[in-house]
Length: 161
Image 1: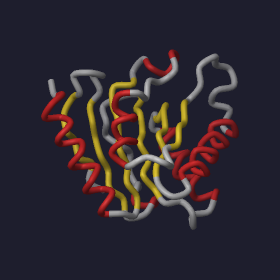
Image 2: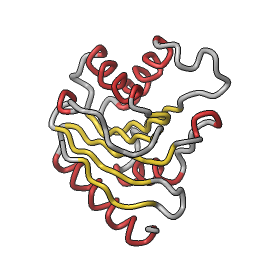
Image 3: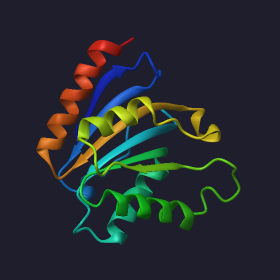
Image 4: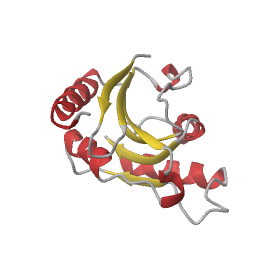
């Protein structure tokens, strides 16, 4: 598991990271984002992945502080729904007026979804405090990982502190 760090975004003041996983189980250790909470872009083809496996992966991200999910790739609307179910089943938002946000981006290019996660994914009020990182995860596609890494590197050339 190689966590790539790009710098701090001058616009959002978030540290930007990417992570390329061959399969979901490759996320075997705690993320070292130095942030209590984070925005997560999830580029993943979940069409042949069981709901339980998607839910288990998402549960790990929730436990580590994900407070906004942007889903992209085949099956992203389904992934979005599974994330919402996981949040509800864990009772995370029950006693809170704020919610963990989820979006899906099925008719967009990957770069558009990345840009949305960087500039438009603003956590709900109770979750924004301590949200000092954005993490783009690509699962099962070296092409998506390469696109993500290139986009983030170029983005940081324009918006680094």
